[in-house]
Amino acid sequence: MTSPDANLFSALRAGFPADLDTVAIATADATPLHYSWRDLERGTAMLANLLDSLALPAGSRVAVQTEKSVEALMLYLAVLRAGLVYLPLNTAYQRDEVAYFIGNAEPAVVVCTRRSFGWVSRLAFAAGCTHVFTLDDDRSGSLLQRAAVHSDRHAPARRAAGDLAAILYTSGTTGRSKGAMLTHGNLLSNARVLKAYWGWRPGDVLIHVLPIFHVHGLFVASHGALLNGSRMLWFNRFDPRAVIARLPEATVFMGVPTLYVRLLGEATLTRAACAQMRLFVSGSAPLLIETFDRFRERTGHTILERYGMSETVMLTSNPYEASAGERRGGTVGFALPGVGVRVRDDAGAPCPTGAIGNLQVRGPNVFQGYWRLPEKTAEEFSADGWFRTGDVGRIDAQGYVSIVGRSKDLIISGGFNVYPAEVEASLNELPGVAESAVIGVPHPDFGEAVVAVVVARPAGAPDAAALVAELKLRIANFKVPKCVFVVDALPRNMMGKVQKNLLREQHRDLFA
Image 1 (cartoon, rainbow, N blue to C red):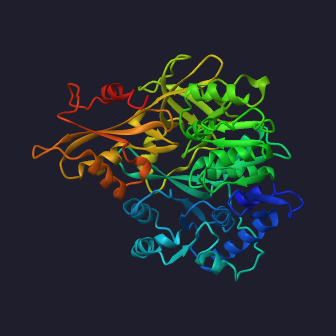
Image 2: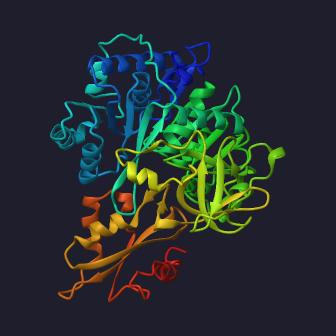
Image 3: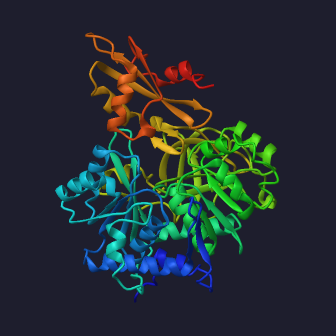
């Protein structure tokens, strides 16, 4: 018996309004553009037909590292439509990082900016990829040129709920990135839950300011608007003053804590400016209670904070409806419908209510495992099938979940994950560095800032500014330490392990 079609694109397209000639996306650039729902239908069809014309093997990956644009969103939808696997790459990734992703995922197609084509194409061709296209945020590039000759009609590929839709790379503490495999069913189930839980309604308008290589912007924001048939006001780059000017036209805004801090820095953010808004969502990093309180006082709106991961999309959320409870600052709310969240101690035993322990989750949104890492996948799931998030938290008697820390020393800076071991590995290769410890400390804008403590080699202490300059050539800028301290030795316990907790305490007021 043939299974029902579960292609995520088909489900999103079913949410388009009956009148396809109405505006789907309006850009907020200097020269505004208006894309109708018919434009999305036709554009994704032509791009999907281009991909079909390449006669790619089933399950082929399409790796994309481009600037944010409506055309880039269309490319994502076209990959789903063609039944292929989408692989978004952070635009800040540098040569060594991109080389690893291409080598590990072995994409059949790579799309990059024109200015990166030279070095990206060499990496792709060396890895056996024969199709490299370019796409820029001004609607130029070989991808659109090639797609323009194809038909604007396309029958979406049939896919089962368990078929792979996307791979999102999330670094590990060893510095080795892992590809989280998300299926059509994972993504669609989460989109439908959020549509109901966050009260998406006819007439909603989303201000889209987030990057689209990330769960928050690509899946949570974009899927929400598309599934609901809602217009998007599209910002390729975040400009707080320009965003505030468009708030009277919108009803929903999604951002990371850094963006809320920057909005609060503008005098034009007032209750009057937010009068038409119904929902402000924050995630991807901890929201400081100070920001939570200041935003409510200034605008009259209480930010809804939620919690998710690359491996699971969204897991918990503060309530939208007042009847379901209050939105509590410092918490990430309740487990979403259909999602299980529990707290276990290091031995795997249940923790008492309110006690701090390791967060584990399960549900239809939880990923299928790590790309080509079956042993690592098995390690991350309990014997009874719960995913070990690596986060440490607690659940109170009312069911509110609070994230109190992260095992494995993960740093979240400006909404992006930074894994200390990866930065330490790069630092330790530099001249004059004997060893290093990388920590995260509180930062009023980024949530957390990356700080490095370096032990010099006997030959002489390295220059901190020179280390930062060299790192900027090697790794993404959001991973580069904002401060580097050169010391004689790192604090260690009796077992020889570096006591990063002492370093965090020593530098916790650095950016106060």
